Each structure stands twice: as C-alpha cells, then as structure tokens.
Length: 308
Ligand SMILES: NC(=O)c1ccc[n+]([C@@H]2O[C@H](COP(=O)([O-])OP(=O)(O)OC[C@H]3O[C@@H](n4cnc5c(N)ncnc54)[C@H](O)[C@@H]3O)[C@@H](O)[C@H]2O)c1
Image (cartoon, rainbow, N blue to C red; front, side, top):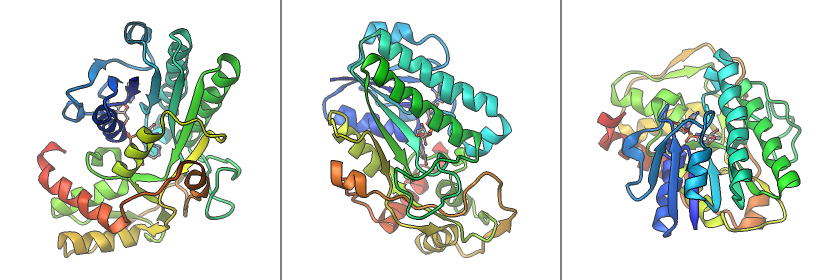
C-alpha cells in the first residue's frame, strides 16, 4: 500500500513512518521541517520538503497515495495563544488543503491525528469519553477540532473514508523539548543539571501515552473499518506533574528540587481519557506502563542528548 504521511519528520509522524516501512508499505513524507528533523526521516521513505498550506497537489498527482496519515500541525498550545492566526492557517487551512488533494487524487482514506485534551477544554466529568461536550479554551484546541469537522464533511460529500485518533499527552524518544511538552522539558533540564520549572502547584494531571504504542497501533489499524470513526488513544491513567518529576528523579538520580512558577491560562487542570471504545472496537492495549515508557525515554535522551 502507498501511504503519504504529512509531518513524517516529526515526533509522532516519524515513528508512524518507521512502523509503516517495517510492515512493507511504500511511504511518502511531506514535511516543512519547522519542528521536524531530517535525522528522524526514514531512509526508505520518499521525502518532500513542502508546506501543507502551499501547493502540495503535484506531490499527490505524482505519488498517488492510497492512504494519507495527516500529522503535520502547529502543535504548541502556548504558541497558538501567542499567534492564533498562524495556528489556524496551518491546522485548519493546511488540513483543508490536504483534504482537497485527497479528493482530487482519489485517496481512499485519511487518518487524522487530533488531541483528546485541548479539544474538550475544562472537563465536566472524568474520565472524558468521546461524547463529552467540547468547549476548547485555546486556539489550538479549536483549530484541531475544527479540522475534524472538515474530515467528517469530506466523507459526506466525497466518500473519503476516515479515522480520527485523539491522543492523550504523547511522550517518548524523539520528542523535542522546544515543543514544550512536560516530560521532554523535564528530562532536558535534568540532563543539563538545571531544576525543571513546574507551572502552578504541580498537582495538575494528564493522561500520558508512549509514542511507540500509539504509532504501532495506528499503523496496525489503518486498513480497519470500524463503525465508530473517532477514538481516544491514551493510557487512561491520571498522572500529576509532581509525580512525573518524582519518577524522573528516581530514574535519573537528579537531586535538586523543581522550581514552581505561575500557572498558564488556556491549559486544563485535570484530564484523563476514557479509552473503552477503542479497546472494544479495535483492541487497544498499550504495551508500556508509564514507568517503563519514562525509563526508555530517559535512556534515549541520555544517549541522544547532542541531537536535541
Ligand atoms: N505530542 C502530543 O502530545 C500530541 C497530543 C495530541 C495530538 N497531537 C497531534 O499529533 C500530531 C503530531 O504532533 P507531534 O507531537 O509529532 O508534533 P511535531 O511538531 O513533532 O510534528 C509535527 C510535524 O509537522 C511538521 N509541520 C508543521 N507545520 C507544517 C506545515 N505547514 N507543512 C508541512 N509540515 C509541517 C513539522 O515540521 C513536524 O515534523 C499533530 O497533529 C498534533 O496535533 C500530538
């Protein structure tokens, strides 16, 4: 099968590409390398350095992919607050541009990667299931969710099949501390012997998912056709920022305390995702416990520190 992955040089996209290649698929990548890295590109995949908000139709015409996995996005919630126009341009207009190329070039299916937390806003109940009301409180949450509507609409208008996976907080090898995700930022600080900064009291909780579990699962399920089309992917485990710091101290031997600074507006206080639907329909069963995943992630950062 020929699979085109937008954002295939990125943290999650590059792992998806690796699993696709390992399973014998013909893989094409579109990435503008804004946060993605050349060293994450799989050598067996064909790479186009291109921007999803510009002309990408010639790539689709030439490559004629069967399936598109769309991971390219502006992914930083705080950046989306600083520059909501750019966030909307990439996440909404960029997705429409990808969908238009899918339509014009007879792509059979698109897999869209969304967020489980930011699209919901402050939860009304926990764990958050796929039917929870959506009140995103950041431009990023709005743009990622808006693009879901377009994906849905292309199915209604043009019969473009789709699946949408809404992730918890993803962590693991190749995460970039510059993208400001808590685990890579903490590890990066510890390896530089600097105390990590914790926003607020650190008792805020998130639901973390190891990138290899998630990428392998997506690749295994690209050909499936379940009745439901939108699924959470997470560990369904509520972990506080203080708890992450505690486990990482154990794993790393770091001795100093973290510094607490003012909490950020636009970020939810607590979130944990209900994953019973994806367990039932697609047999989701992540292999790594949080402690195992964190240990592997720390080891990867230690070995690859110069890459970051
Ligand atoms: N990391 C998480 O915790 C998380 C959680 C929920 C959802 N997601 C979603 O998963 C997807 C992948 O995120 P990630 O964590 O791998 O981030 P990432 O920044 O590592 O990956 C995004 C990739 O898209 C590329 N890109 C950005 N703008 C582009 C453009 N205009 N044209 C072409 N390429 C462009 C970047 O260079 C990068 O390689 C995103 O859609 C994100 O919204 C991530």
